[in-house]
Length: 70
Image (cartoon, rainbow, N blue to C red; front, side, top):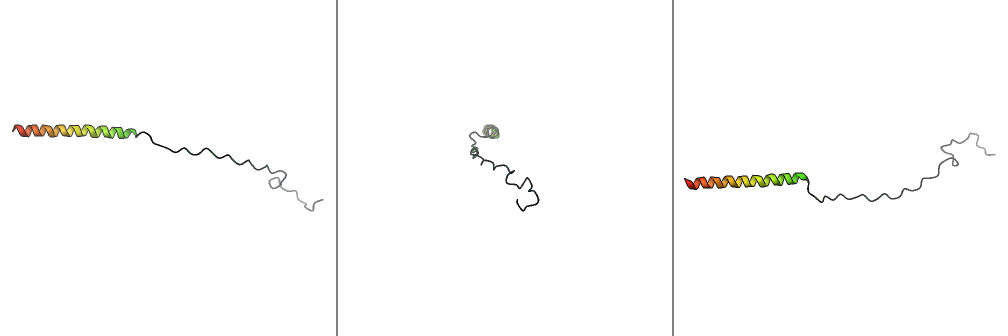
């Protein structure tokens, strides 16, 4: 008979502790984010810059034509 007079608690008893969980399998490697197309805002800015450049060139050409006619 063991000389232990109090029963062991179920949480610390080696007979009642669940077996250790199997080690988790390595998760899939994190996918690396690769941006393979530019954001939509880039197209909008390029469009505005192109339009603004054409308008500026047209206005300067108009000024040149007006200056030469005087």
